Image 1 (cartoon, rainbow, N blue to C red):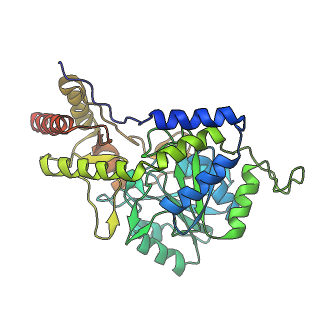
Image 2: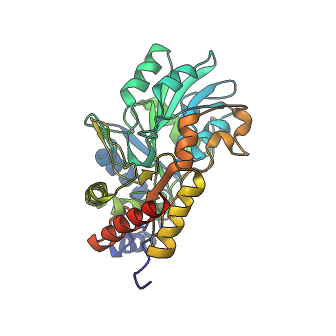
Image 3: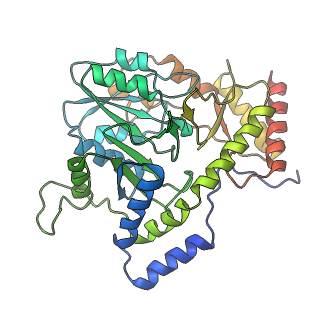
Length: 370
């Protein structure tokens, strides 16, 4: 095997980011300061217009503070998907509320509105959708359900920077949206998160909670946290923000190449009116057991030197930390996705020869396992 390894993800960090960090270090203003304020404004303008944004130290923190500021707490239930990273449900549990797991639509891997509707009880206060892999959820249907049942609607947009639903950016539909800026996301700040909202009181409370419960120094009005973002991280984020649109177009072009060449697998489905940003390019081996899927992943690594990702092989409702919230729960589409899904490299560093090798590798491995 002479071909260079193709990693499943590859953050792009260059001189632009290094120079931005060096500038901040030279100023001596390293904690939350002017860089964070500029990053918040620029992120809102480019990724979450017309919302206002508040920067925090992680996407999970954005979810947690958004829930608290929206009044979610002990005794409440929030409906969430089980097929996602645990941070979604964790953030609900951290408020003292109960995450209630609903099933997904197997074609989009996002919340199934029918399952959401069936999960509502007299304790339900909100629905929190996840725009998984960079594809917007069925926002219109979910919002209608929330409106009909007097529920709040929240968006976990951790993987969906610049994704759109019917021409409008995600993170701007619900009471709040939350974005992650972890290194493997479509853009990064090293570590970090961003909350988007239009309600001024909710935004004020998020700022208070992120700063030890203070709006003014030594006037703590609530028990808060140190969830602030540093100017060092904001400088990296600002540099990345100037490039994320072009990187997204490359991701979409790469997805088009894979769509046209892959055989024997279910490629990502993009419903009309939704704009995918391909944080992950996730295929599905229809009817496969997890072991069959893993065999394909191993063949891609061993025979073609291609890295892949198996995300959420254990759904949230079966995790040791969260299973107590879902005794005996049956989510068939979630279980199907957990067994059949495999994410392929899609990042902007891929060249045509890389994409060609991915296509040849997947087609060969799938045929061998047929």
